[in-house]
Image 1 (spheres, one colour):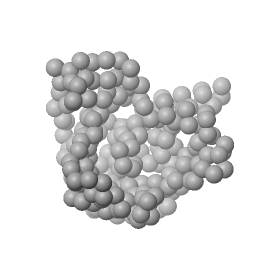
Image 2 (cartoon, rainbow, N blue to C red):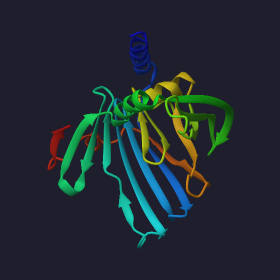
Image 3 (spheres, helix red, strand yellow):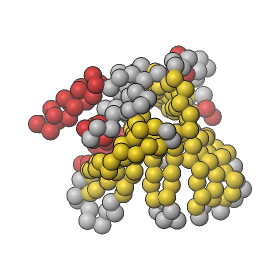
Image 4 (cartoon, rainbow, N blue to C red):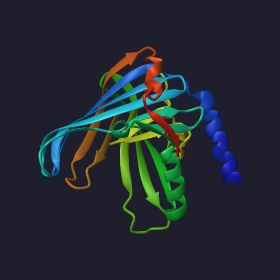
Length: 234
């Protein structure tokens, strides 16, 4: 019970401490591994208590069939309601659900004793921004064969503070999740400028960086489903 109360207090405190960021952030991840080469472009819109994520993978070579370009379902986050909306373009449907990462964290922590350890490495300049370098390690207390995975994350306070951490391929950590509280408690309350993981297949670094930061309020309609979409609660 004490842990639950403490976690709730952490979330409440974070809602107060995080300044609301109004901006459009563009990230690029140029990859090359045994499965193919290409570039993933991810655009994150943030405004007050909302965020939107668009991500497109443009392959230039593929070990599995012909190279193609594919987009992830657009995600819309509501940090007040603690819910996310998945826009399924092929079906003109908008599926609303509680933060998926929170549900996954709770299940993994219960089943496998999963936890996240955040280490502060030091300060560095990345892409012209003053950043703090963090390493987040995922561990398991119930599975001794579980290989610890590490994510290196560079966060800056030069651009204010946001509500969404982009920390590895297609992994967006919203305010209110356990991993977000771990990063924030370590001092990482700003904007992610760079992340790096080691590809498990090629054993090569996989790096993504912030390539454009456009301050200002995005249009309000980017945070709502299109009018011709059917909205369903999950």
